[in-house]
Image (cartoon, rainbow over all chains, first blue to last red; front, side, top):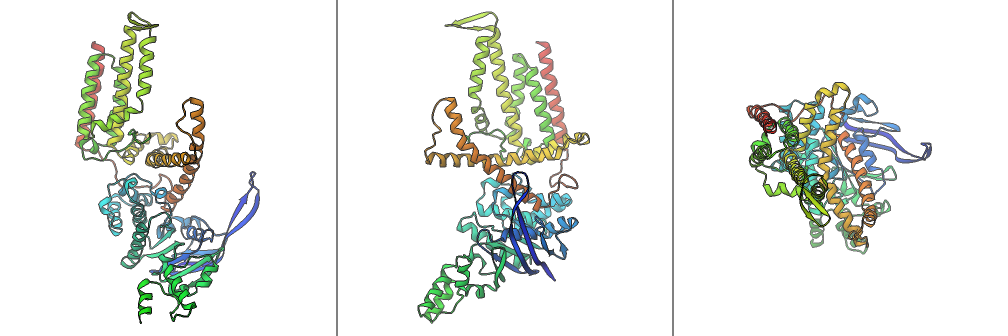
Length: 281
Length: 266
């Protein structure tokens, strides 16, 4: 069964004037079909304003569809009584690490979700310990979030979601505000959770480098899914990617340009080592 | 200029005071504050001093760190002290130019300065030794009965803890905006009240805009983590009284009674 099943999803934002009359409608999602199997690592790529964050909020029931339906673990997000179940099943990590940490102590923040769910005290502690260990932040449990680096804060935020024992985690541009080291840390943790705990991961990003190890990639533009496929397939369509204003990773671009100028290199090179091997042989 | 403010900040350490139930510390702070205003002679103040210093000692918070909190109010202290000293009618002790120092004035000035200093140190002792979450838990439980009168106790407690969490972030942001505006030629050093106030506008507007944006982000993050008010919520760190807490209650009551007795006697 698909853990996430979106059918013809439409979301419209209404622009209103000062009196609240509708001035215009902007369509953020325009007939999106998305099917994610449990245990997969999925990436959604898109530049600013492509609708990818709106899609993320639909999976967490923070927004409900204007048209079409989305089922998360078999539950329709449009039904108000499903809201909390869905938020528990599909946890969400946001872009700004400072604006999603509620408590002043790491462990208390991780406990916030289970507290809201009404989990008994002993179990909260157990969950907090497991969650913090799974992101390698256990030794920082009594620290103040303000003294952590961006990557560490994002890992705490991931732990906060893990403590709710979700089946699926949505990472909405988790690395946009981080330095390169922090970025790697967060992506590595996301892959680890996917592999070791069998958590479905949906990574929303505009950094193409981050999606090379995903199982499946969707590219969004203007509220529609314009490309989908395995990373190698997507990355071999360099010109199409560029037409959707995506930055292709340097190494893929280099291989692409080499091929155009006559060097026999296959399309869709993802890693530097790969290119070196091809060029050596 | 903002970094020195230690009021309202938590100082992590492992001490008896850190371990005490937040309700005990709230109770202490309340009675201590009443005590400060009940005390009006040197004997009562000596008792307050002994109480305060033993509490500071027990808290393992460096005294210097605590005194830093006073820097913010030094100017206020001097002005208020001077007004009290020179403008209170009474028997003249000394004359400096047009100003006269009276005996009542001197006593009032000393008393008021001492009260302010004790107030700041005592109350910051509570916030320094209690995490904001524990503090709000304490408030929430202590004020629980008010819930029946439709007072949104849980919401107020949560608002407080979030405000405390964001103080350092907003302070840092203020610093950043200040530097950014200074790089574009904004002048924060000019003397004069009106000019200074005007110079604050390019600082406060972006700060408010960003604070609102943060608030909206945070609200969304809380919703995403199933926050739906205080109903049906469990506690990660529920409050239980231990033996230490009961002893502390007793000591606080004795201490307060001592202050009252000393006031009546002298």
